[in-house]
Image 1 (tube, rainbow, N blue to C red):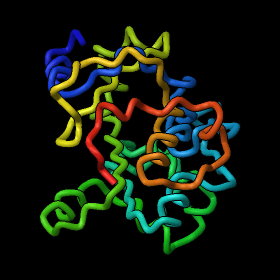
Image 2: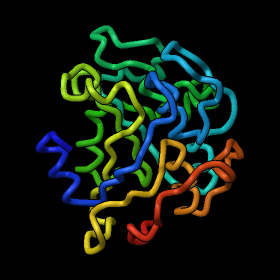
Image 3: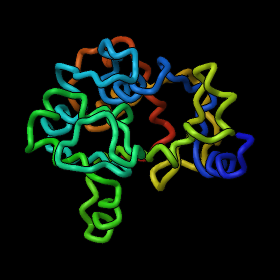
Image 4: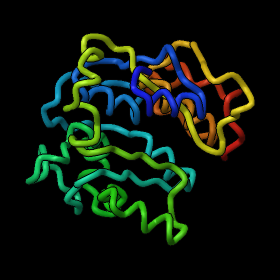
Length: 213
């Protein structure tokens, strides 16, 4: 919140002041956001994960999804990083899912982030969007986040037209990366993955949102 722009974003929506990562380094947290589990992933090395993930539940209900990745080479690329090293696989949890990575009809929904502008112009932005910045834009290689790398307290804010701005601008409830899956499941009445999303994960307070189904 010492960064002026991040502080501004917090004032425009709902700041989650007690939000936490589930592990360090990065990759387990990304896996957690679509599996509600680290699934045995504890490092940033390439690791393939068996079993269903959030896109499986979305597709089951006919909910469209797409993962926009800055500098992603496309076409199911599953190497550790792009030739320019700006895209890294560890920040793309979808390509770690065996059921997505090995299926060309599914990994087409992982796209280069440049596609987002065209999808907006065409009115084809899916219902569920996951956006990952590249290594130059992620905060990993800048100084202002250095002091945060020794603990798991993560800056998180909800902004957008479906956030109820008339309510208080802060939620101090305890959340972490596991909270995403049960929140999305509840919003679209999805099945449960059974990875902890139905027993061990705390969904976000839906009192802060308009109905977005």
